Length: 322
Figure 1 (tube, one colour):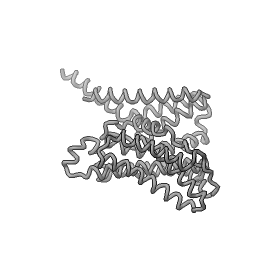
Figure 2 (tube, helix red, strand yellow):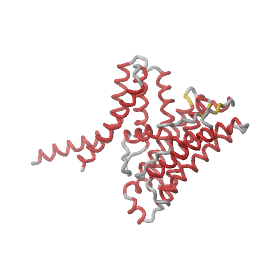
Figure 3 (tube, helix red, strand yellow):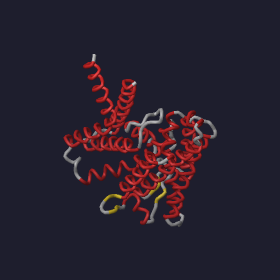
Figure 4 (cartoon, helix red, strand yellow):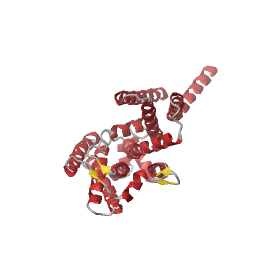
């Protein structure tokens, strides 16, 4: 009996270890496969390109992580990204300096996210329904504002956000890393971060403990809107134009990055470290499929399979640990 108990304990400890590092293991395995399938993968220009592409989804995924940690969901991030980018472009083309346009873009994103939070926290509307409605409204506002046409930006200073670099590192990558470091610290070392996990773990118990649940939720959704606007600035700057269909479907990529990264849809477990690796997994997968000239249609199938496998593995491990 003692030997059996010891073997069972070893097996459980191994499972816990695999569960803790499974996202990193998957990422490293994918890197290995990518390097074997294409010699072009491990070139510096390609790696920087992957990180630059990932930065847009990854930054949005930070906000999505916060929302999902509270057991919510935000389907509006893509539409918020489109609208805030369009406003920034429109303001710049009207003659306003781009620093003011950047500030306005971020404020609007923050307010749109806060509106989501108010509807969910104060209005009591399920997050799926609330953010779905805001998604449709924001997309409609974008089409009205742009009249369905791109808004071209001519101010060369604005190009730095999406195309500039610091010490040879593209600015979007620097910005992504800074945001992830800050939010990692917030979640791990602040009272606000502990409140987020508590709400996702048991909202009613958290409320009874005197924690301002509604206020925390509003701030979380506001941050999701803010990060969407930051991604909008990167995307718009790279193209030097605002596209009315910008961010279409990006909310699914963000949710995928969060789920693959190990954050549970039921809330209370996960973090931005896993989300960053999840976003990188999606980016590397896209990149290697592009290098192999795989049709975009098959790329969507591959993404769907990865998401499904990630959810199934998480579900099975959760049952085993119980």
